[in-house]
Length: 149
Image 1 (cartoon, rainbow, N blue to C red):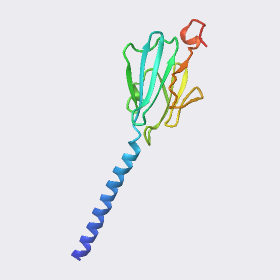
Image 2 (spheres, helix red, strand yellow; image 1 turned 90 degrees about the vertical axis):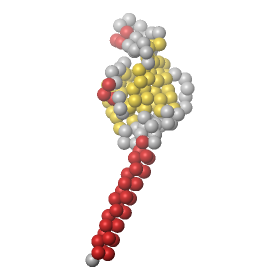
Image 3 (cartoon, one colour; image 1 turned 180 degrees about the horizontal axis):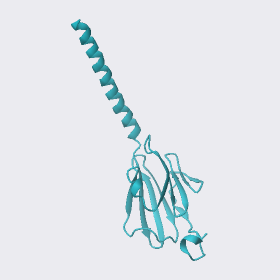
Image 4 (tube, helix red, strand yellow; image 1 turned 60 degrees about the vertical axis):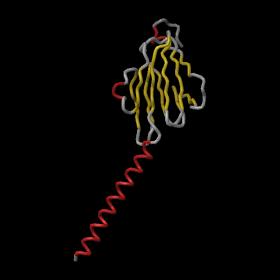
C-alpha cells in the first residue's frame, strides 16, 4: 500500500514538473520575438513615426509631411504595454499571442498595419529591409490649407 502511494505521488510530481517546464518553454517561444516600439516626434513641420523591433533588428521610418501634431521631445510607445496611452491614433487591431505580434492603428487618417513580415500603410506593403523612409503627404482636411494630397 505504501509503495503504490509513493508511485502515485512520484507520478503527480513528474506531471506537475513537466507542465511547469513545458509552460516555461512555451512562454519563451511566445515572447522571444520582442515587442514593437513606436517613437513619435516632430521634425520641423513633419510628424515622424519610427517603428522598430530590437530583437528582430528591423526598423522603418514614416514621415507625415506638413503635419505638426507631434511632441517636441520623442515619445516612446511599446506595444502591447502602451496601447492604452497611445494618443496619436486609434488602435484598430492587436494580437500579441506570439510576439512581436500584429498591431493595426490609424494615425492622421492613415491605417498602419505592423506585422513581422512587413509593414502596410494604407494597403501599400513596405518591406522591413527597405531603408528609404515612407513619405506620406498630408491630406487637405488635416492641414486646412487645401494644398495636401
